[in-house]
Length: 318
Ligand code: KG4
Ligand code: ZN
Image 1 (cartoon, rainbow, N blue to C red):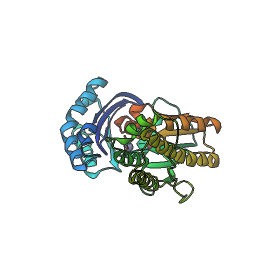
Image 2 (cartoon, rainbow, N blue to C red):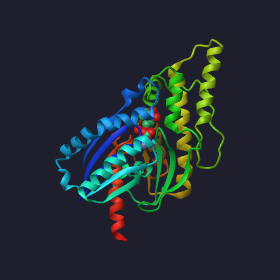
Image 3 (cartoon, helix red, strand yellow):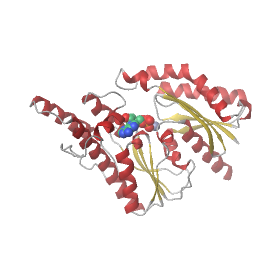
Image 4 (cartoon, protein in one colour):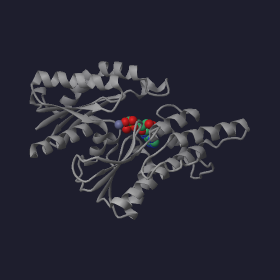
């Protein structure tokens, strides 16, 4: 069985080809350079660039996989959540292909895709708990079986990546802020600044707007008082607060639900402090941990293809 998967929910247009659960190709056109000058993703620009890019991404992906379009058996695509204009371009491409080839079309959920990125080249056993940390989402999900997603907690305001991006702008860094903050933080290992952690809304929900506002207010205060800011240490203090905050919540969930596996996903999982704290915490709690390869952490079609493969298999069992 050959699956063609499309992901277009934000500023990446990506097409992957799978032979069953094996990824044959995963081509991603990134728009980071195009959005940089605006300090963040401009939705209208993102969808216009998807229109320009989808054709070469599609043909490169088929070429790399050495599969012809007539051999494809299923089309799967990200239907939600995401930027509406960006999602529509992916949907139109998916529908057109499915209609032309007269094959089934499966609309899928982007966040479920992030969870399934951990299943690529890995055998995950249930129950499993996933921590998804991206530019648009922060979520802890419990899975008792395939395709059973019980959201234990999610952000009530900003997402963790969004918080990195917004604080980075105030530090004079460019978009995307996450990697820029990490680069500064690596020059320091001292948390000189006290970034306030939000009070618990409830056990597993997050709030990042408090960390964002607290960091920005502290920066303003230091500037107004003409106190020189150690940017490296500021970045380190901010990053440490965010990482500790998500890991503390995840650890609570692991203690309560005792999963066999714990999974990390989403763009922020490229962060080396988050990765090492995640692995250390899993080890202490005797849980097997999986962090997908970087190309499967940020937005990509391979994860949507993997979710599609499992969905087709599970529907076949019914
Ligand atoms: O998953 P993703 O590619 O797109 C969304 O679904 O949002 O995540 C993008 C986010 C951005 O906010 C970016 O700043 C953040 O991931 N990010 C990082 C790092 N690399 C990317 N955050 C912290 N440290 C990093 N190394
Ligand atoms: Zn995403």
